Amino acid sequence: MSGSEMSESGSQEPAAAPNGSSRPRPPVGNRVTVVLGAQWGDEGKGKVVDLLAQDADMVCRCQGGNNAGHTVVVDSVEYDFHLLPSGIINPKVTAFIGNGVVIHLPGSTPGLFLFMCECMHGKKKLFDFHQAVDGVQEQQRQEQAGKNLGTTKKGIGPVYSAKAARSGLRICDLLADFTQFSERYKVLAQQYKGMYPTLVIDIEGELDKLKDYVERIKPMVRDGVHYMYEALHGPPKKILVEGANAALLDIDFGTYPFVTSSNCTVGGVCTGLGMPPQNVGEVYGVVKAYTTRVGIGAFPSEQSNDIGQLLQTRGKEVGVTTGRKRRCGWLDLVLIKYAHMINGFTALALTKLDILDVLAEIKVGVAYKVDNQTIPHFPANQEVLHRVEVQYETLPGWNSDTSAARSFDELPENAQKYVRFVEEHVGVPVKWIGVGKSRESMIQLF
Image (tube, rainbow, N blue to C red; front, side):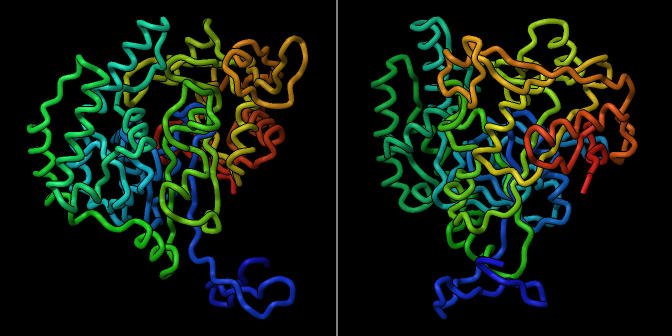
């Protein structure tokens, strides 16, 4: 074994350094298990995290904000999460919100108090005026270009923009010197009012609210880098990381500009939690058995027909955060392979297979053509992506109810073939298959 050897007790021991050196490498410590979306979001990440969190010690969010929407059903009760990790339903876990997350305190504090979430000092603060700016920007895009980006209007873009411009404010700033924080808040607010003259901000009223939060959130705030290091290098722990959004919404690798404002691929785990890549263990990609997308932007396998309507209706494809209907189409394995190139998935969770139960035949996208030429990569440019012709393979449906299946062998033969087809084309094994909304409806293969 390279890196570190396992002792008989199961703990990791430092391995000898290469080139004959006698100086050992430092021990790696605990490794985190990462759950990431492999499409445009809404794949069912929350359900996978909830499942894995049953014996976890810690669940983490590393990026995004309350623009995320994860639904989990436990004992016939449905829970919708926007900021807190879905695994927090387990009362024994510690929830940790990392520095890569942007947080809107009025929209999150009751949940934080209820679950005693651990927060990181570096987290960026999302204010009410960021949400207002988001709405104004969308309106301006519509007026100037005839279309907007279709954001959730939760202020995510503006607050990450402030971070990049180095004018953002963090939780550690709020808790340090409130006088200094107030001055910086006023400067930031005035900057936005200068850019958007119609923007109305009650500066003093907002500061009064923020001051009230200081003592309430202080017991839940920790220095994130130190806290995470102690978790990784202390006693053995099972640590989960729940990604928000998904690969095709990543600010760098997604279908830009119709993306979110953070890195929702595996690199965001390290930068969003303050941890090294050597501590990343299993990386699970969550894939819906068909494809959906909220808002506008290229969608090669979209079905604007009866098939798309059937998937939308059967799958109850409505956004948890926005309430918007999701656009629906066939499973696109070009997308999934692209997401795998970036994230290095060690296994997949294939969700909502039961939605396909009524189809006589099922198409799966396996390649793209542009100008009648097969292209070997996923196009970065939106105009090119709009022009691709998806090459499909047609598989036979199974025309039977899979929702009661609790093992792979209980699935119809053609459903099993569908799963194996995905595995073979992506080159990653399917570890879970979802055939319903509840926790019990996740079939584990290995």
